[in-house]
Length: 151
Image 1 (cartoon, rainbow, N blue to C red):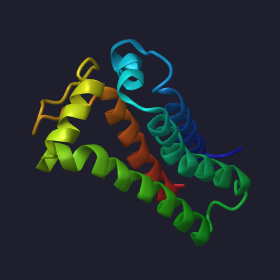
Image 2 (image 1 turned 90 degrees about the horizontal axis):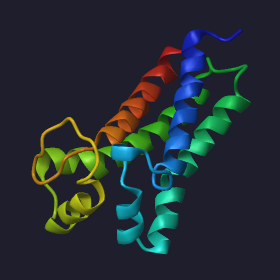
Image 3 (image 1 turned 30 degrees about the vertical axis):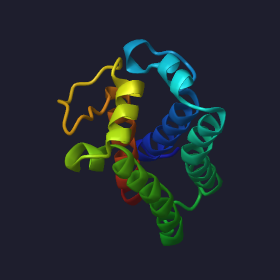
């Protein structure tokens, strides 16, 4: 039987994959705005927004499941730390750096179009308000990074 930390680690990766595959397509009330996404996003952008975040997460989850017997190996931890570290850097660049330091008027306008109708508990800064759904996603990415070294 795997430890509770291992099960949490796998569960976070499954949550992450389901999130990136479904959050722009399934309406979740005030948590997302599917209509705004479809209205303001071209088909190539939709495809990229699906593939770019889901590919590393799908790889990470598959890699984890294939190495269930050897999660203690340093190479296992390094590969997953690189995958989820890269993903977390993308999340920082997409949301938190613009939130903390500002962004172009174009990016602010796009964020407002996509997320102004979604739930947020953080105050607006520099015209950007991180919505609660993405805060949960980014917290799960950070938790996954921590668990890579804790399991």
